[in-house]
Image (cartoon, rainbow, N blue to C red):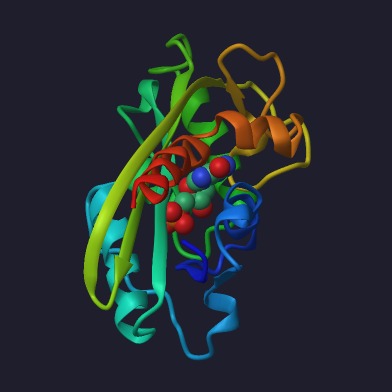
Length: 200
Ligand code: IMP
């Protein structure tokens, strides 16, 4: 299916990962930074699926005829009852940054009530495909791992420098892009999207 794929995000890291995985399927993979006046919609949903659909539908209504892909993703930490979940990007509150969210995560896991708990966690991602205000498909993906006791590595974004995927001793911040893109939650959801494209 050649043509343009619009990724409904302003997050250059997400777009970069999508482009690395999908470049051969489309003539062009763009994002909202190339579309003037596209403010991100409020993420009012309580699940990744709801927020992913909100983002995909909004962008697809504003760009008629264009195939839109939205991703909503986040980190679930078992010792925190699944938090930060859909609040991953806003975990440390107003003005949150990736760095302040990581600091907050380490602080929450150091609390005496949870400090002895296993640090198991997973990244989840739900991708929604839409065109002209209609949802065409959605796909999910997850990657299991654990939260390290300190940050390591400078690659990736968000919680990458704290997340050690199962089967590795290094964080996503230390592992190469190619390794992350071969096993991440986003890569797994995109793999299902590629199968859908192939059967389309
Ligand atoms: P969203 O842009 O509303 O989907 O928020 C996603 C948030 O989840 C990001 O701001 C990160 O904090 C976190 N996140 C999602 N995917 C990743 C990833 O691949 N690596 C690290 N953090 C991620």
